[in-house]
Image 1 (tube, rainbow, N blue to C red):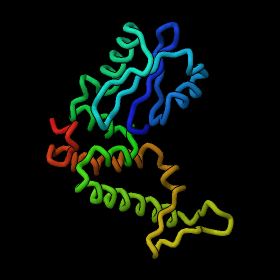
Image 2: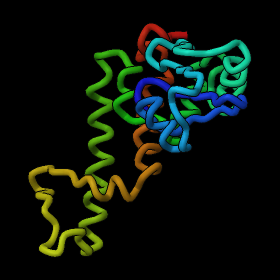
Image 3: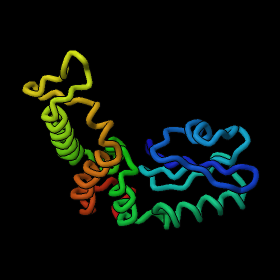
Length: 179
């Protein structure tokens, strides 16, 4: 997911969304929908706003109901956002944008430590993904993408746990999420 949760509603009133989708097109492709025949809604995490790009009152109610019950939109409390992130639904780059600028580096460093841990564990298995062996120079601090991809949602959860340590304190949040 980018900075928004993308939601589509088809002609029969069914709502569709996809975790970590970067666009309406990505959601439409996941469900075999024609994007141009749907209603379009977003919840922008950085501005903490529900946005209608193309919609009707009834489809807007469907999306708002879905987001309220399944995600965190009950006008997006910080606690519900933390819970949503804790479940691995938000990329680390988006989480960083929800922190004050002065706190982002510490968060990224914590994520880098997690990435190094996954890289070291992968190398310790002595089962490299390349036939010629592991191409990562761990002594130089390089990080391998392969173990992060294999970890999937667990990697996102680990980074979210570090983000929550900061975000829990309103002083570390961007203005839209201070209260």
